[in-house]
Image (cartoon, rainbow, N blue to C red):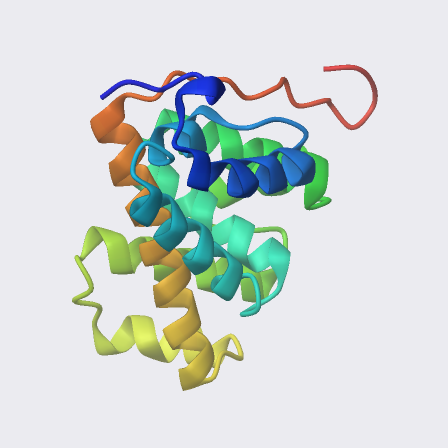
Length: 179
């Protein structure tokens, strides 16, 4: 699959891409690729918008990083690292831990471990995993949200892995200085 130039995407996707560009500071190649099919772009963007209302942002970022690492999606790791650091206020240490399915925060660590297990087991988690995520303080409705955020990350992982999307993410600035 090819990543089209912005001037080559269908007209009906321009407003969505403009909005994404304003939020992120650039239009990522992933969204330009998805724009070649307006229905797919709409589905992904709407899912992301809906899921932005569940769990807190750092937990969603942590889950996305854990799932992207488990799936070996270099593009998603780059974009989630950028967004987590530059827009999400996560430290380099917490991003590193998230990639391994953990966190500096005990409750977020439980969500990341659970999400990673959901992916690795293809959704066939055992009772022990459910007990652990509940013991960390998650309710059943929140567990549904964890699974859905994991699947959202899985969707973009698969799209980018199939496309072998070129990484176009700006360099993440280190906490103490320039990128």
